[in-house]
Image 1 (cartoon, protein in one colour):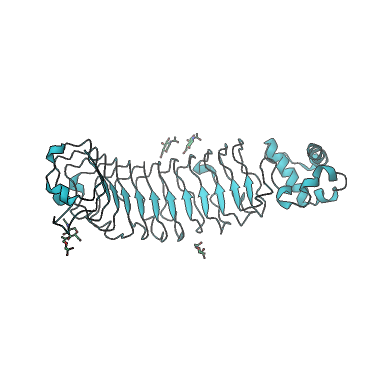
Image 2 (cartoon, rainbow, N blue to C red):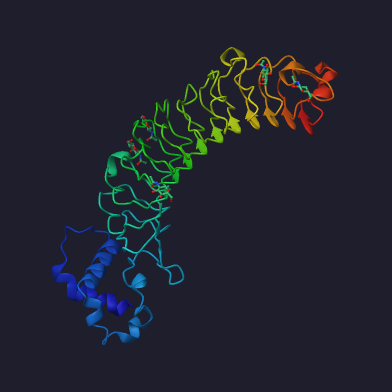
Length: 364
Ligand SMILES: *[C@@H]1O[C@H](CO)[C@@H](O)[C@H](O)[C@H]1NC(C)=O
Ligand SMILES: *[C@@H]1O[C@H](CO)[C@@H](O)[C@H](O)[C@H]1NC(C)=O
Ligand SMILES: *[C@@H]1O[C@H](CO)[C@@H](O)[C@H](O)[C@H]1NC(C)=O
Ligand SMILES: *[C@@H]1O[C@H](CO)[C@@H](O)[C@H](O)[C@H]1NC(C)=O
Ligand SMILES: *[C@@H]1O[C@H](CO)[C@@H](O)[C@H](O)[C@H]1NC(C)=O
């Protein structure tokens, strides 16, 4: 292998232009790909048969960039992770899965992925990507991309021209404050959108048209309200650690698929919660812990898990859980957390036992 590389360097040195990337691995890779595209490797098979015997009939290994691994056992994958790369290497056309995470990549120029139109999966997380150093046409030739991992970078806005084919999009742990309204347009197959731990204040109508979205993670942003145009199939909405002080009266009744809503560590007061906002029978879990509630909001008898710890609740109101209490009417609540409030065990009325007969866990 080493002899072959040396030969390549010696014979191709003259044609190497110093305008190419200066990183030595990138350079070697450039030479190698060039050699193959000119049939160089094939014509020298006789001289180097013993050195290259293994690679002989394996295009996937032949055109693999030197800085990456393309295993025989998984020919559609290219592993370039954890090797201090500063650039995206050449991606051979048959590759579907490209792993570039845990490197030092700061910039991506337009065209780097264009040679590989069948990419289904690009991992670029845990690099140093900045929004002003990535091209706006990087992904325009990726009609099949389903998973894009961009988390743990230094992006300040959602990249332009993301493929509509995406199903999973991870952009959490960046510094994103700008979400242009067209960012997710046409992504009718997007199922999970991870935007947690960024600096988003408002999503505007950016979520409109996400017909397949079931999970939206917006924890740890700067939202002051529940996002508008929540997708119709949304089942899990994570909004912990924002600045939300109120919820719209109908945001749950219009979204019957919404089962899990987490709003802990916000600025919610009872004044910001309309009477029936959480009184919907479709909800299974509601987390309102670490807010500023003084009363228990009215919930549906279908709710199973309610988290209210670390508020300022002074009264255990059975009517919040059951409108009628008899043998046929009771709450389905399994878990109720009320610790770090202003209620003591002796404040709980006796009819609570009948109403909450299905509870397995009540923490005070
Ligand atoms: C992150 O991006 C900002 C611009 O948005 C830039 O000023 C800063 O130097 C970048 N930080 C790193 C570690 O690349
Ligand atoms: C969504 O997925 C379906 C089925 O796999 C596919 O036919 C369609 O083209 C995809 N939509 C987009 C916008 O990529
Ligand atoms: C995050 O973005 C804000 C501007 O939105 C900027 O002031 C700040 O320096 C950025 N933080 C980092 C760590 O790049
Ligand atoms: C809660 O919903 C139930 C069932 O839809 C309804 O009967 C009840 O009046 C509602 N309670 C409040 C306070 O909105
Ligand atoms: C109480 O239970 C009865 C019998 O199951 C039912 O018809 C009635 O609607 C329930 N009332 C309420 C307020 O849930």
